[in-house]
Length: 276
Ligand SMILES: [Zn+2]
Image (cartoon, rainbow, N blue to C red; front, side, top):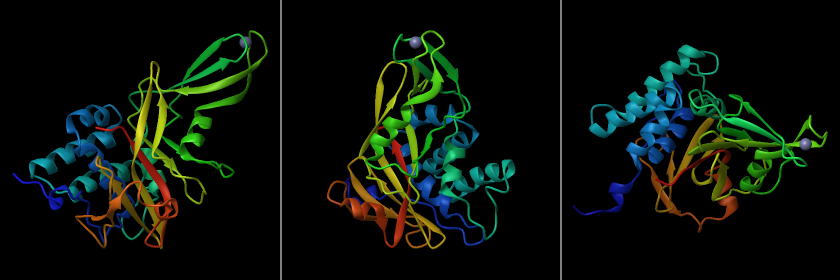
């Protein structure tokens, strides 16, 4: 077999003009590219997350076997989301927010993260299991700098609590019971610098996640870019590129302003993933 560029072109989903699907098209196209690099590895991660990622995994597998389309996969997850919340995930000519969609898709149901509150003075530690810490961070209004720095600050910050042992302020450290392999950052209307990698802290070690897909918004429509394992950048738009994507160069050769804008749409969400 010969390998040519055409074979490596990441597929995407075609936009549904009857049931506006651009948020799903953008997120699921990025997730397919992450998943397809190593389906066996991602199977476990998707299945251990929640019913949505688990259903997405099943659909991706059917697509690889040629028994289903990516659109049918998208719609099966969409039906579940609609059944659970028809207001956030409507059908017809009303779109959904990609941030709401990602929050729901990445919500850790089966593996609950732990919040560590650690005293800076006597090392007294309180641990809280919290489902409220999802795998999506909203960047604060006044935050500046790189996404990596902002995430670090989010994962370690001084809490309102004081130590019941010595009254010193407690530092909050968010540690995940199992290190996340995917993470999303909502940067809608934020002026931040895109980081190529971010660090996620687990119980034993720190995991590096790589930029996999920026999502763009403008004119009531979402599009995305895919960054593959060879650092190629691809553009996907369910309307204009449909089931395929267009190569746009290599990551590292595209400037920050050009990463934050994409064909008149603005960066709104970033997906990071573990290298497969
Ligand atoms: Zn203390």
